[in-house]
Length: 323
Image (tube, rainbow, N blue to C red; front, top):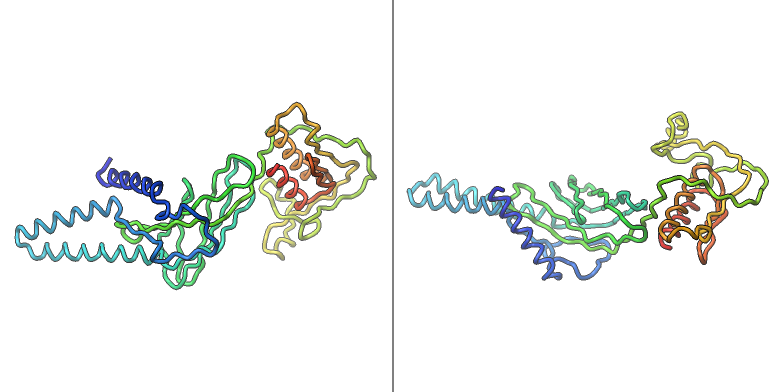
């Protein structure tokens, strides 16, 4: 490992110790309401490992220039030192005034990456080389003066339920990598993680109650028999004219004849444990939606349906996630 890499690893260990021992310094204590604006009192600037090596090089250059009375070498050392100090100011000003205005987290199933979008206000300055990090996930973004700043991350998920978004680190090494300026953001944001569906597709249970055969149209969609395109949809199902009018891909839903609805009962699966029941019910909800068949989700203390459509699917998946 190089000298710069060793110094950088040592600095990261020191920073981790400071974060554990000095929570007030790293904004670990309390959640903050949006919007969160970065200002001089909460932006910290330290030299990087490369910056420390660069400082040591300047020290050696200055000693050699003074020892040999070499004025050009001494002038070069002074110029490089001035540039390094100015780079510290530029790194600070890149973060100063940035404001976190919104955090949008879309729902996903456990085991899938959670899409998270951060919306910042950049102000009137050029923002180059900004980085945002949540846990082990990082992203790079930039914006011209007056333009909005957006960073998109995909957070890993393991368990169903509400996921509290961890604190957010915004930092930069712009322009030369000599200094690292950073700040912590801790917004009170929670995202919903749906249960992981069962891997095997077990046939849907039938209610046994015959209903009058009728044509079922999709419910909860913006355009009646049209819905948004999904990755698994065939290209021949795309409604090109409607997609051109609404500037997004739409798929025409075929009408389906339904003779009976489905009852998805939690208590009807006594042989499975809690998580296995929830995984199977989640799979059944998705299967019923694909078949465009009305279904009822029955959980202890609540009953959802019979109904069909994206709104009903979201209600059922939310109930299973929070059960």
